[in-house]
Length: 153
Image (cartoon, rainbow, N blue to C red; front, side):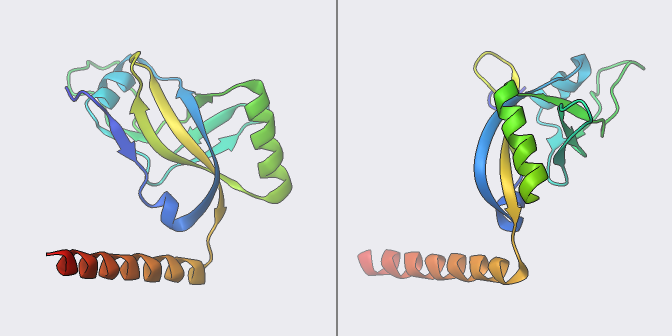
């Protein structure tokens, strides 16, 4: 079993401009947390949405089935509830409804007490030209670092 679980959504920062981040707990069953502790999860295609009661859920989060479980195993792509303060939930729901922002999972990790947590971000979608600008700035930074390294040696 791995000591520190750190499952990231690498695509989120490329596709979205992250405006604000929150840390939320995840409601998981027995075999889900065991599989997550083995690092068998993916959040690359997932997103968050509210239900009619005002609760926040993560959709399309893939947690592979636990290999040592019997027929009581969990569904890999089940909808999972996220736990936040009421104040944070109301603020997020207001932002999503009013301005059309999206809530995107950024990272899943196990904290020091052994609880599964998820960093979520209030995000605004990038346009195609913004993505091109991101690629361009990343390439120029890489070239500049390469030149600095060769100059120092």
